[in-house]
Length: 217
Image (cartoon, rainbow, N blue to C red; front, side, top):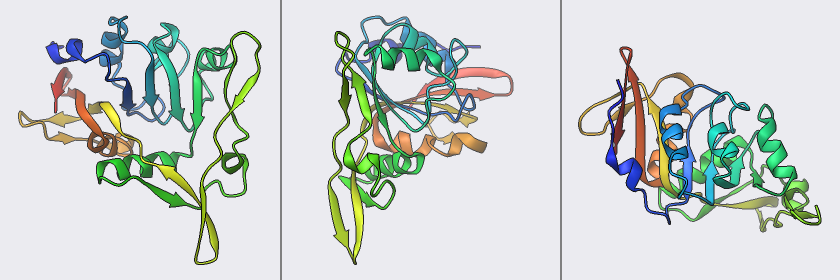
């Protein structure tokens, strides 16, 4: 059973940064993603996720095919060939960030911190800003990512990673009560709690006992 929640269809246009949980196709809130696709007025979305799912199969594939996403912050492109095509054609900007760095950047936002220093990515193309963030649609010229701010602490170099603050977090939970308390299982626990704390609004798809509902937290 699907319970309709009006708030999903009244998300303000300026709510454009969306943190989307899921690990591969595990913990994917497909019903909510399908509903977002029915909102063509929601464009220029900036999605934050571990990955983008599989082409035409699940995850963020519907929003990629509809052209509603303008930027993806993720750690893995891999199995989504449509995302690869949109990236190479200049339709989507990519910010590649290690999985652990994404998690900690979300955690910082949830704790009211501006960001963190990490050793991950030191002395690599990440630090030097040599990863193509996007391609010019007309010329095909690569536009590189920004160089990372660095700092030496106790004789070691660290990269500055800013916190990731979301306007909306889209989650899939195992159970939820009427107060909005959610229980997550297995791989969904990796990002769900972090994204909920980092966002202004959380929309949760719940699967329990063969029933599917939505809840707003």
